[in-house]
Amino acid sequence: ISYELWFKQILWELDSVRVIFQNGHVRDERNMLKMVTRMQRISIILKLLVEQFSVLETMTALDFFDFRDYLSPASGFQSLQFRLLENKIGVPQSLRVPYNRRHYRDNFKGKESELLLKSEQEPTLLQLVKAWLERTPGLEPEGFNFWGKFEANVLNGLEQEYAIVQAKEDSEEKEDQMAELQKQKEVLMSLFDEKLHEHLFSKGDRRLSYKAMKGALMIYFYRYAKGVIVSVNVSIHLDNHVCMVHRMIGSKAGTGGSSGYQYLRSTVSDRYKVFVDLFNLSTYLVPRSWIPKLNPTLHKFLYTAEYCDSSYFSSDDSD
Image 1 (cartoon, rainbow, N blue to C red):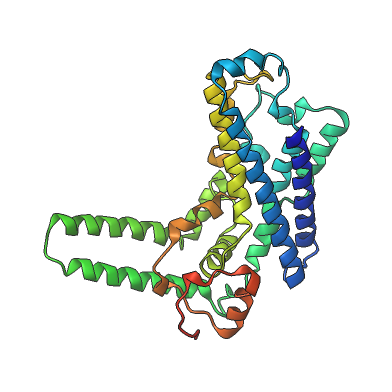
Image 2: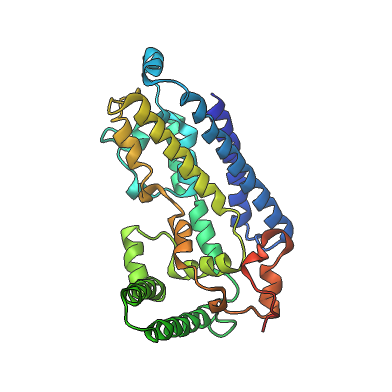
């Protein structure tokens, strides 16, 4: 019951954030503060829910088995609010894992089914964030041209790294460093391959458009995006539940008739990570000197007092 009460609060906070995005008032500093506060509140609630698993973990599997029958046929899958939360965040219907070979909505009737269908048709948080990222100032080729400058800096930086390693005497260490540089080059250069991105996007391996990915990386370099914490904690919440289920019931069927652990394990794969692209941004971290310096206009925009993390930058003046 306590989970459902907290889910209700999370849905209210999430809906309010989506309304701000939909109304196009994200740039307003007051709305930005409101969004950050509400997303932070969701994060804290999710942390609280995660911590509750530690109480169950004090029980042995036999202790849990003693009262497990009293839970049947109840199941976490029957939580309408959690399904609404998944839909509003942006879990793709095409990537959902079937529950007992049935569409997830088939387990709900009447008004509940209508609510789920409506939530599937509304703009998701992922879609709204994607549209916002695509409008990130500084991506314009005729303006600051962050992407063009970043690509040039990466190429130049890799060439310098290669030259340094190449100048060393032949050794096993040199071979290892050259191999590592080659791997780094392949990862970084894949960023600038739009066709590869579109291919991964069509498969569902990427969720953001190419332009939104550019905006996300630019913000990642210049500002700490607090909203990312939410997706991290949703994943922790699911992962802790899976581990608890495996320890308590092993491969037995779930109380709601599901395959138990096998079903839950499948729901914590990347297909359920709505903001998987944000999770993976750290893959593309580069030396600070490779990041283009901001001009004064963008510096002011991205360094809003409440939303930046200046630790990533040098104290040099911008160009």
